[in-house]
Image 1 (cartoon, rainbow, N blue to C red):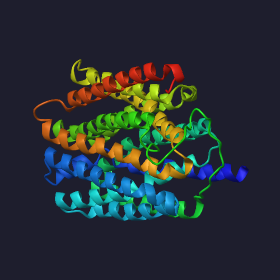
Image 2 (tube, one colour; image 1 turned 90 degrees about the horizontal axis):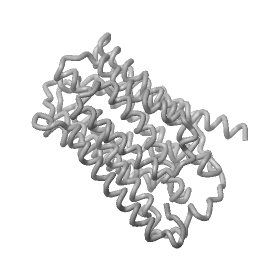
Image 3 (cartoon, helix red, strand yellow; image 1 turned 60 degrees about the vertical axis):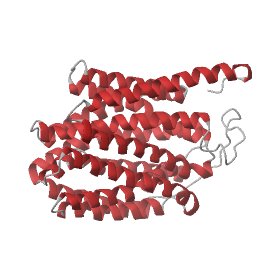
Image 4 (cartoon, helix red, strand yellow; image 1 turned 180 degrees about the horizontal axis):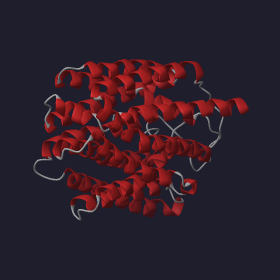
Length: 390
């Protein structure tokens, strides 16, 4: 038991480190690409292509993770990504950035499903799984509070290229850490009867709760993609320094941190948490584009509701999919996330000169809220005599 706890601690430390390193680059890619003459449309295409390559990798990764194990799909992508980040610092034009960023997205697509599936293996029941995901969420959110601001400061002091060199070297060091200290483990667990109905190949990944979570996950990541695009673009549009935009991302992560620290929230129905979280994110967007409220405040509120969504998303997966299929399930979920990022990145780059991307994100989010809300009411009416499905 003590050995397993130490192994889980190593995984959590690893996830924290890799999240910290990755988020250092969040506020600097857009101004870095713009420095090479990339327009907002081209930047949107680069981010969209990266998300597309990430989606492709997610779909490939799931079955391979389940078949060959998780560790190999953590270490190899890390070594590859470290080299690609270093290559970012050596790029001389936007075309090279297009290729390098896309390849990096493909490499990292294997990492997240494998890492989350490995962490989920260190639990004996769904509540413990939810707790593990929540702890990871807190650690990565702490990274998100500090890393973007640090990345912006580094770009101001040592330049974009040198910042990418440091990111790449740090990822390579993390890959060595993962190689020697990360261990796979699978506890034998028994699921509650109401959670695990008879599972067949036809419904394993497409049950009603999972389809609902996919739809909400798409909308949430569409909103997240708009924020990821728009906030760094303030360096180009309004002349803000990368450290200022990095600080704005810190407000987003601070909101998520507050929510993730409330462990009691994990007791509530994860699908209800998903719906409330998406609705809250939509209302925060409304405050940005319509009420012109303080951007730091609205990003803080967006983070609060984002922190409500992410642990619930993982819980829906672990409660509705057999343990041996976790890799494939998290691969599908990651692919859905990537699809939201693809559409938001490309569409934002195209429409931002004509209409607020925040407004479009608000419409998409509210449409999903309406669809999911109506569907839940209908299913509750149908299933009520036999017991509440949700």
